[in-house]
Image 1 (cartoon, rainbow, N blue to C red):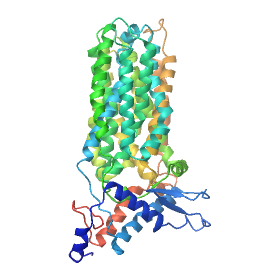
Image 2 (tube, rainbow, N blue to C red; image 1 turned 135 degrees about the vertical axis):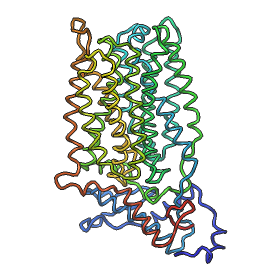
Image 3 (cartoon, rainbow, N blue to C red; image 1 turned 120 degrees about the vertical axis):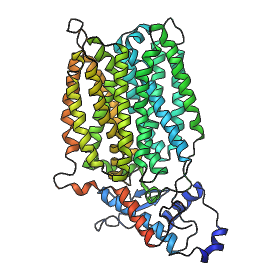
Image 4 (cartoon, rainbow, N blue to C red; image 1 turned 90 degrees about the horizontal axis):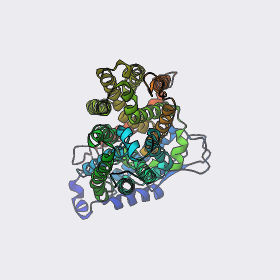
Length: 536
């Protein structure tokens, strides 16, 4: 055990590292002192090294396995730790969490609420919006579709921004939210009618803002939280997005009683969005020291992260995640049109959409802390996915009952299962992909959901019955399509760990923390928070 008394004078003379000092020190060590060995015995000199806190593979490396890279990252973390203990390096790492992390998390949560409310400003009142903008409901649907497709267009840039930290990404989102909302109001300022083209442009800008914050929670929790709090932190910021949709579903119908009320609704949403976005410029960029060993583990570069996406297990989670997020987006956008033909009101549809989300948020708030402790990610996924598929199947018949209780119950169950799945799937992807940067799998998962959501809305709109059907313009065929695809997707995540591939489901980030914690405990080193870390 290192004696603090024997080095008291040295410690008093040493300054506490700042964020920049810490980054520079890690980069220097990675470049100059801790070059890593070649990958595998047959690498033929193909080596990896860290640079600027990222793992970089040699340009000649082609056959790279994700297990190899994870092992390298773990070894890199151990090398850095051992150097600070054995060599007496004074610029060593202290593992600590900071209260300021909550400011950034709350701001990220607010932005996700607002950007989702922006998305569903018009869909809950599609009939009145169509009259106000002198168009039809299909054109109003395209306001939602364009929002989702905007995500797909810009998400590679959001990955790049998040690779350098959450703050640049959050600021970019805030700027786009401010611009998009006030451009939408410029096209809606008159109570006599609006300019659809101007509103569409503003809607696209708010859509471009979404990937910068929706893909950020896993990156933020990885940077600021320990493995005992990451699932809850990711859940709070990620599920804020559908919570914003719930606000839109519930509040907008009460704002709008006729076409002329659309103008005031857009104004109110713009003001609220502005108030929520402005604090983004003042959040801290990064903690002075990492929260745990995995937080200081060098991450793979973007190029190498993309090469590591060949893992089958990652895709068995990514594909169903994208499908179910896509259906949530399409059902949320079309719920008003699904229920109105059967005699329900816009208020009924708004409450149904709010139940879908609020019950889901409550279920996730209960399950996330439990999963933070137990790490039973795979079990949670295999419970939630069949419930989601069966809920979409049963919902086919719910509007036809003409009894509001049926849709309320089924949508509540669907919300509980769907929302419990979101943070678990995102964190499990980070665990399986470690040391890939968390934003890579997160951004791809959300982009897939937005892309499929837009496609599903287009397909559902095309399957809408005509005015001669019973009831006119019902969406029964769209509900059947949704149920069939949802059920076909169920076997993908259910096959995780089968066929002798259970060894591919190791949670590498948790293992990295536990391995380094055990090593530090053996040396008797604990930080001021009671968490194991290196001495300073």
